[in-house]
Structures are given as C-alpha cells and as structure tokens.
Length: 327
Length: 305
Image (cartoon, rainbow over all chains, first blue to last red; front, side):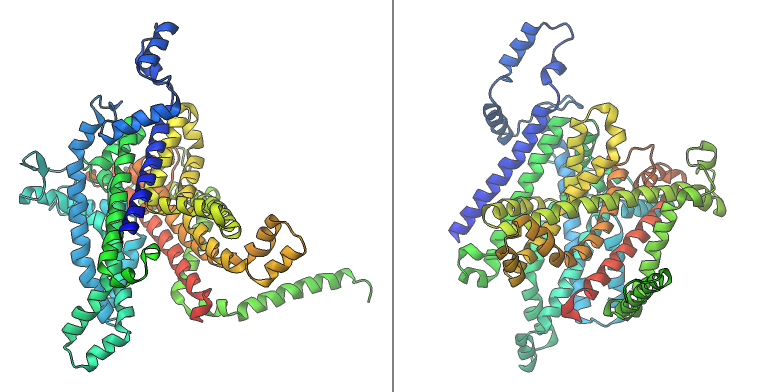
C-alpha cells in the first residue's frame, strides 16, 4: 500500500514538472520580454543591464528552477492584460468556478445514479427506453449548444432565470457565494445544469451497465434464493458493488468538469477561471495561461491521486494482489 | 486461350465487379446494416450532409460573400430563414466536415504509427510513449486543443494567423485525439507480433519497418476504423466548440461553430433562427455519425455475432 502511494506520488510530481516545463517554455520562446519592458530609445547597454538584473541571461535550467520555485509559492508575475498579479486575478475567480463545478457534480450524482439504477432494474420498461434515447441525444449535444438552448427557453422566452453573470452573491468571510440565497442560487441553476448534463448521462449509462452486469452474478441469485427482499438485494448487494467504477469515473470527471467549465462560463459569462483563461488565450496573456495550466494540472493530479487511493481503500480485492498491479 | 478480345475484357471486368457487389450484398455486414433501420437512416443522413456540404457552391443560389443575400437579421419569415442562411450553413458544414476529417486523419496517422512502434518495439520506447499517452489522457481533449491553439497563437506571427487557423485547428484537434488509436493499435500489435506469419517474415529477413507496415498494420486496422468514425463526431463537435469560443476558424470563414457564435449575439433580440439552424445541423450530423459508429462497433465485433 505504502509503496503504491509513494510511487503514485512520484509519478504525480513528474507530471507536474513536465507541465511546469511546458508553461515555462511558453514564456521563453514567445518574443523577448525585454522588448516589452524598455522604451524604444533604450541603448544596447541598458538592455544588457536589464537582462542581467532580471536574470534573463542565466542558463536555461537556472531560469526554470527560479520559475518553478516561484510557481510553487503561487507567484506567476503580472497579467499582461489586466496589469494585476496573476495570483490575485485567479484568486478572485476561483470561488466562482469551484462553486459551479461543485453544484454540477452534486446534481450529476443525485440524478444520474438513481436514473442508472432505475434503467438497470427495469431494462425493458418504456421509461427506461425513453431515458436511454434521451441520453444518447444528450451525448451528441455539445455543451455550448445546451447552454444556448437553456438560455433561449428559460431566459428569453419564459424569463424565469437570469442568463448571465453571478447575480446577487453573498459575502461569506471573503468567499463570494451563490449558494446561500435564493437570488444567488437562481443564477447558478442554468450554468450548473448545462455543465452537469453530459456527466449525468455518462453516470446514468455507467451505473446501468454495471447494474446489469452485477445482477447476473451468482451471489445476487443466491441472495434472492435466500428470500431477501428486493430492496435489500438491489440496493444492499447490487448497488454497493457497482460503486467502485462510479467513484473512479466521478473523480476523473471532476477534472473534465473544470475543463468544460471554460465553455459553460463563456456561454453564461460566468466570471470564473475558465473565462479568464479563454480571454488570456485570445489576448496571448502568457502569465495567466501558464498559471492556469499549472493550477489545472495540479488539481487533476491531486484528484487522480485521491481516486487511486480511494479505489484501493474501497476494493479489498486490490489489496490482495500486491501493490504493483493495482490497475 | 491466349488473348482476350476487348469485349471479353470488358465483360470480365463487369463480372468481377458484379461478383464483388454480390458478395458484398450477401455479406453479414450488409445483412446487419439492412436489418437496422436506425443505421440506414443515419447512413443516408450522413450521405446527404456530405453531398449538400461539398455540393454547396452548385446547390446554393446565394453568394455568401454578398451582404445583401446574407442578411439573416430580417429573414424572419419561414422560407427566408431557411433559404438565406442555407448557403452559409452548407458552406459552414463543409468547413466543419473538412476540419473533422483532416484532424481524424492526423490522429489516425500519429496514433497508429506510435501504437505500432510502441507495440512492436516494446521495452523503453513503449514505456515512454505510453506514459505520455497516460498523462495526456487525464486531460480532456477540449482543454488540450485549447492549449495547443493558445500555444500556436503565441508563437505564430500575427499576420499569418487567420490564414493558417484551419491547419492549426486540425493539428490541435488531431493531437488531442491520438491516444486511443495508439492504445488500441499497441494492444493488437502485441498480440500479432508473436504470431507465426510475423515470425516467418522476420526469418526471411524483412526489415522491422516492412514487417510493421506490410504485415502487422493490415491486421490491426479493423478497430481503428470504428474508433475513427466515433472520433469524427467528436472532432466535428470539438471544432464547433472551439470556433464558438472564438479560438477556432476565423470569423470571416463560416463553420457551424462560428455561425452559432454569430447567432448567439442576437439571441436576446429574438432572432433565434440564426442560432438554432446551424445548431440543429451540428446535432443531426454528430448524432448520425455517432449512430453509424455504434453500429460498426457491433457489426465488426466477431464476439457479438
């Protein structure tokens, strides 16, 4: 167990270094930063002096080490576009994205799993068939189109829900939140539904497939033969054993929720990290791009690590196999 | 008989064609195709999209570069919002299909190539390629494509950006999709390389590259076709997403994504048709290609027969 975790930790660090390297090479290959800083009339000697004092003539590994050391402390320099420190810009936007992702993930779990169980138990029922057909369409619908459709129906036609921005947020000890008041919650409904729809269909199909698989096994037949109630068999025995892949996928999908938040935030003009990143790409705001890249990589790696360890904790069979072959 | 008359040559050619057509119509694959109405509809829909998209210059009566014929704002009454926009929409579909195809081609070439090398050579090469694949797989394709696009935008000089935007898009989407091809091909290559025909080829002294390309490759291409179909749908959606976000096809060129982006600006003033029709085209196209892929996966899988 311990060797396994240590090995995974080492791998994660390697990934982070690789991503940091990519982010750093963004800085070093795009133009000459000195040109952006000094005036047009600066002499060569002045340029040379600036280069030296900023440490830009140091060898590549030294510069990379300096970048990494600063990055670990959250210092990515100034944003070219906003002229404020990148850490501040991201810090302001982070709560919005995290709240959105959190609400979407909870929705996907609370709706997706029960629907999956239902369609798994009543595999030939009319409702199941309808749900499955809808889910196929849901997978073919791109996220941004779902968002536009929802805006069209609920904001433009019905006028029930706001279509952009965070609306009224409540300040909870420095954390702007949408979740404590109804007015704020109204703003998060449409973006969260848009973001969760794909994960919801994915979860539903996954749980359904797993349920069908498990219901065929001998121990379920045995449980029925023992005369246990349907409820005990379906939920106590069957559902419990479908949870391992569900947890893995949910964990990994949180990563893709953060990535797809870029799209949702653009459609709904939600002031989160994704929107910031997209604007950074359009304006070639390299410090923000580099910081976002490192932050997202960090989040992904941490989630992957947690999922792997959870996997290990939940499924006792893996512990018997010896640590090297946990996958 | 030493020589055939011209008529006989023609006849044998026709017969051969008829024979192979006959064989095709009698085959299991065609049978399962015919038995699934959904697949037939999906296939026809895809074909119609292709014909409409690539025949757009001939089929559409309107000049898409002329402001007067492309004014979608006033096109409220039913025939107009279909006709006036259809020219742009068909051309847009063409751009989307071209980008989709080229990017899938790119990821097939890259993925199959790396997968073959990885599976055949094994050892350290295999290890390195597969670790890279693992790392990339943990990042969603849209994010990777966005990053690559941002990278390209930062490196390329401003003047050429619009001109090469489509190729950048193709490379970005292609690079974000190669992993599953590489994984599949690597798996089947590792099975194939221990079979007798590969060993025989090695014994007679063929070079590893020749063995990979001429002997192993034809035997591992089956699943690749299926994945390629499904990735085509994915690539079309990714292209539309990136163009919608404003980081794909330049605004001067219509693609389904840019049309939706453009229409989205007018959503609040009630001009819903500008968004809905390209959106509908996108969804139907993606759904049809997806259904075809689903059917192919089942039909080509010998375990399910």
